[in-house]
Image (tube, rainbow, N blue to C red; front, side, top):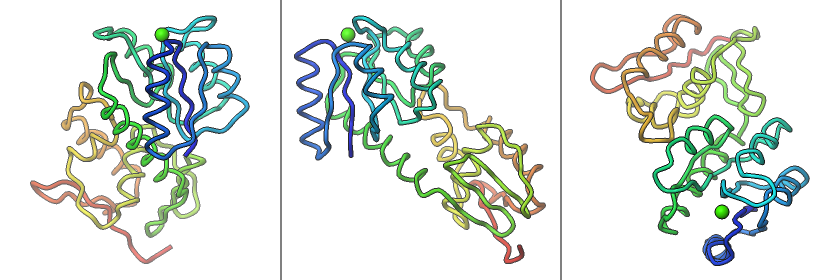
Length: 222
Ligand code: CA
C-alpha cells in the first residue's frame, strides 16, 4: 500500500516513515501543509497519517481542501494530547480516525491496518441481496432498480449487513462499524438506525435475532 506521512517534527517523521515502511508499505513524506496538500491532491495514496500542527498550512485546512477536492483516501490525524476540540474538528473536517500524541507506534500501525482493511472492503464495490443492490464506491443503493435515499449512517449500516449477509451481527459490531471512535459508541442508537433502515427496505429484509442482533435476509426474487 502507498501511505503519505505528514509531520513537521523530523524525529517523529523519521520514526513514522521507518515503522510504516517496515510494515511493508511504500511511504511518501511531507513536512509542511502546502506540500502535503499538493501531494494528496495530485498523487493517489491508500491512507494518510496527518499531523494537525504544521507550518505554512495547518492540517485541518489541508484535510478540508482534500475533501472538498473529492480526495477520499482514509486519513488518520495526529492531535495534541487531551485536545478534544482538535479531535472533533478533525472528524468534522473528514478524518477517519485520530490518535493523540504521544502514542505507541504499535497502536498507530494497528489503526492504519484497520483503515486499510475498511478501505479494502469498500473497494470491493458492489453487493447484491435479493432485490437490494449496493455500490460502495458510488454510495448508491437500488431496490428493484429504483434508487433508495439513505443517510450516511443508514448507508454504512446497510453496507456492513450486505457484506455479511445471512450472518447475525451484534449491536456492538454494528456500532463499531458506524462509529470508529470509542467515545461516540452507543449501541442503543443502533436500534434507531436499524428501525429507520428497515422502513426503507422491502418488508422482512432485516431480521431481529432476539438477544443476538440483526441479520440481512436475501430472497431469490429480483
Ligand atoms: Ca507538528
